[in-house]
Structure formats: structure tokens, C-alpha cells
Length: 300
Ligand SMILES: NC(=O)c1ccc[n+]([C@@H]2O[C@H](COP(=O)([O-])OP(=O)(O)OC[C@H]3O[C@@H](n4cnc5c(N)ncnc54)[C@H](OP(=O)(O)O)[C@@H]3O)[C@@H](O)[C@H]2O)c1
Image (cartoon, rainbow, N blue to C red):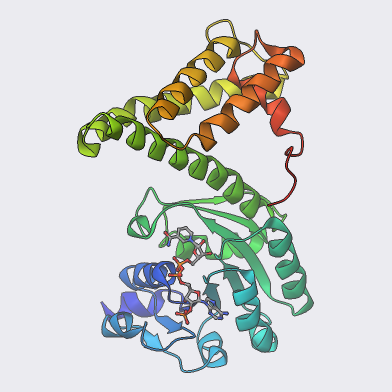
């Protein structure tokens, strides 16, 4: 047991929010000597009880391992943690699993290059309970050498560790693109609960039927991807005029029940402008034309 423990790469985890704690726990489970640090002390207690080493200072935490993982709220937070220890990080591998924009990921990579740090950027695509599981997807981009050197160790965090390329911003591009899909879908899901709820349908009875929608998405996405890559919008089975009529029915029913229709009104607007643009015979995929334009209301 102790031999197995000492052959594993020592790792340091900076940031012990919900995700940082899950990452550190996964390293411990896989037998990696794990050093942890968090801005607010106390969050490490359960990890220390499992064998993690608590570092009082960031520099002490960095010095403990050749591989340093940071996972905090955003890049402003990771920058404030890492900048004072740039010299200590030199020659070590740094993996930033904080979510933020591609631009900030690239800026962090430029800073790391200036300090001789082997830098990899990553995006965690699963919630905390899935960390450490074989099907947990974590995306990486940046230094291929760093990824390949530490791939086995990083697989302790998630079996689906995908390297996306040398551009440090690519993992964040995938992250934001997938999260945009996720949050839009979440808003649609909440609308579904609200609408069915107005007729007294218990959420628990409605929930299993969401699988019918979730289940058709992978094949739908693959078909749309083919259309998009070919630059052809097919729609013989599901043209957008028919779909816009369906969306109008949802809005009518929701308005009649006093519900918020902002999300679906936005979707209807995309469909209507797509039809007005001459793509009425195409399928929903043709709204990509509207997505490629700036929003009518520019502010956030
Ligand atoms: N939780 C998830 O399910 C999930 C899933 C995928 C990706 N992620 C990503 O993982 C990252 C961390 O998420 P989380 O769930 O762990 O968040 P969290 O529970 O809110 O924890 C935030 C962490 O950031 C630290 N922090 C915030 N501002 C800081 C600053 N100025 N200086 C130093 N430390 C600072 C906090 O330290 P204190 O304890 O001192 O406040 C804490 O360790 C985020 O980028 C998130 O998008 C999370």
C-alpha cells in the first residue's frame, strides 16, 4: 500500500471550493500524495483527515509537487493566487481548471510562458459527484507535452480526459459553447415544469418524460453538424415554418396561464427572422444564420 502511494506523482490543489475539494479527493482516492491550499482556511479539514497535507501558504503548496492544479471562481482569482508564486512555479506543470473566457485563458498562458511554467488549461464538463468517475469529461488545451506527461495522473479526475490542441483558449471555447447550450436548455426545462405545473402536473410525474427530448438530442446534433459542415440546411422532415407555429402555441398557452415567455419569445424571434430571411423550407438548423449576427439589443 505505501509503495503504491509513493510511486504516484505528488499533486497540489489550489482552491478548495466544491470543485477543488472534489478534485483533491479524487487524487487522494487514486493514491497521489496531495497537498492542498485554500484562501479561507478550514475547507481542507475533511481532506486532511483523508491524508492530504495542508499548506499554510501558496508557495509552500507549490513547492510540494511537480504538478499543480488550480480551480477557483474565475481567472481574476487564479491570477491573484498564482502571480506572487510565478518563480516557484517555473519548471513545474500548472493545470488551470478554472472556468473563464478563452481570452483570459490565453492571457494566463502568456504569463505562464513568461515564467517558464508548463501550462495546460482545462474545463470541467461534469458536476462534482462525477469527478473521479470513468465517464467524467474534462477538456484540456495548451502544452501537449504537459498533457502527455501527466495524462495518467489527470485521468484520476475524470476518465474522459480529452486533449483539444495547442491553443490554450480551446478548452474554454468548448466550455462556453457547451455551457451556453446547457443554460439555454435549463431555461427551457424550467419553462416546461412551470407550464405543466399550471395544470397541476406534479414535477415528479413530468420529469421522466423529459427523457424523450434529451434522448433525441445526440442524433439531432450529429445531423445538424453534418448540415453545418456541408453548408446545406435540410428541412424536408421538420421545416422551420412548422416549428415556428409550434413555438407560437407554447407561447399562447403560457401567456394564457400568466407565465413568463421571455425565453420562448426569443426563440420565436430567431425562427421568424430566419423565415423572413428566406430559409422557411429549411430546418431549425438554419437559425445559425441569426446566431451569427450580433444581438439586436447589444448591451448585457
Ligand atoms: N461546482 C461545479 O459543479 C462545477 C462544475 C464545472 C466547473 N466548475 C468550475 O470550477 C471552478 C470552481 O467552482 P466551485 O464550484 O469550486 O466554486 P466555489 O465552491 O464557489 O469555490 C470558489 C473557490 O474560489 C476561491 N476564490 C474565489 N475568489 C478568490 C480570490 N479572490 N482569491 C482566492 N481564492 C478565491 C474560493 O476560496 P474561499 O473558500 O476562500 O472563498 C473557493 O476556493 C469555477 O470556475 C466553476 O465554473 C464547477
